[in-house]
Length: 248
Image 1: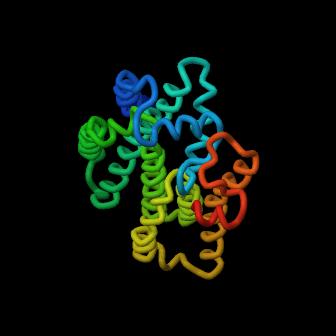
Image 2: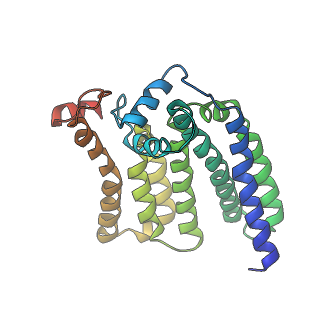
Image 3: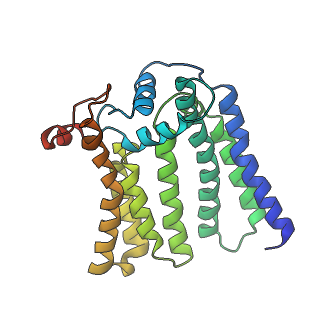
């Protein structure tokens, strides 16, 4: 790649992440908010168990953010949403570029870049995303998983890199630990795979995909492991099999 084009791409990536991040940071809720936000702030700080289905991935990610050496616990857990909200904008930009390249492979990339930039600019300041990017919630993290999986599946088709579906399967399993509602994306995912990957499927390949899916979903072992330590916030007490199944 030419140095000028590489520098331009780096500059675009910088702007697409840090511009929305600056917007969310300057409007970030400085303390507790209503609904689920206080619960997620406590769960992230103390590595507790959130309401069903537990959101173990969010708890672990939020715990990392609470190690930031400035700000209150509430501010730092709210910052999780701002970070992943900004990352989501960048990922959606990549997804649009990949979609346009898939549909119009002979078109110049300048028009695609302009279209993608305009789209994510409007999305960044949409009420739903902006609101969920300034308080402690799981949705920006969950949506980053959704878009990342879509990018992997598209790139696997475009570049004939079938192993990318293994990584997509792992991320899908892991994403359920952000929000269990991810299981509602299974029909759409299966349809896409059937349309574009069905020649790839053999019993061997299917077994590998299921293995990576289970490996990602194994993040839910966090629930009984952490619940056995009796944290302050231990919703459902899922340390035994019955409670675990009920909670999930």
